Image (cartoon, rainbow, N blue to C red; front, side, top):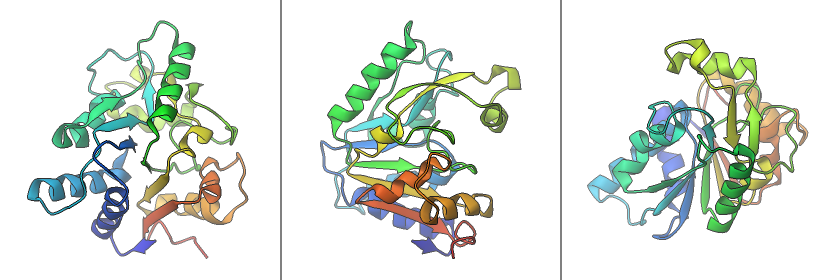
Length: 234
């Protein structure tokens, strides 16, 4: 679904998200600049009473850094609360980034996400086709797990920290197979820098080299882009 600009992308994505939510539904939330407009549009509609769709009660994080103190503004739980959850009264669920046993915590969180029967999972995509912290090479059957962040990912995220050395080295991420259990997937993409990744995800082989290509196997997946992000789609 190609739209003229970021505002139209946000409108369309908000429609797709609200369309499947019920009062007790769970919504999967991704951080990043691309989904932000959709979150803002949902908040705007709810505040104005412009939507008849009740908003979910629970929001589940796509991923979370390991090692950051609870309440640190750079934890993804903090980011999601600031951007959307507090305004909508969502109860944010996520893995404990300070768990004594991260592997066990990843397994626990994965079970919680699956048991929640997520109605719609919001996603962004990386320039290399990653979803969450599922980098190229991740198994298409991967479950929620601990991952070591690539140096390129740490460099990309360093702008949010005081120093590159402060960027965590590990995180917990939902796996690709975990994401596929959501009833609907909505991938939101903005900008020419993501154009090749969009093309690979939609028209390349379903392959671990492009984790986002797994969306081709989902029965109710939507990709909403601006014209720049769709430039390589032929």
